Length: 110
Image (cartoon, rainbow, N blue to C red; front, top):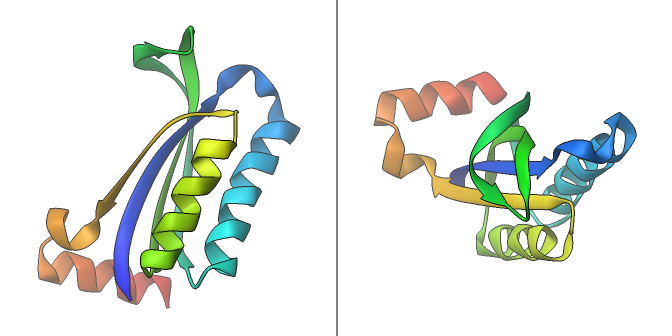
């Protein structure tokens, strides 16, 4: 099991119900494929630095989670087939956090 962080941007013009549906779909896909959400933070609507699909704004979501290679593959597949996700970025927490900080993140989720 490894630890990751994903940031994804949802189209801003969807409305609250559809945005919630996309976030819940992500969490369900993660949990059905050996993943566990450690923390999920809906940052909200912000301007994007680059225009994606003619969108100048997006709804940003950040999630820290644990999972396997299968989890990552299925999550990426979900983002690619979900037309309402503009962009996503996944990084391994081991690569961006110190060992002590990573242990705090893991302990905070339990």
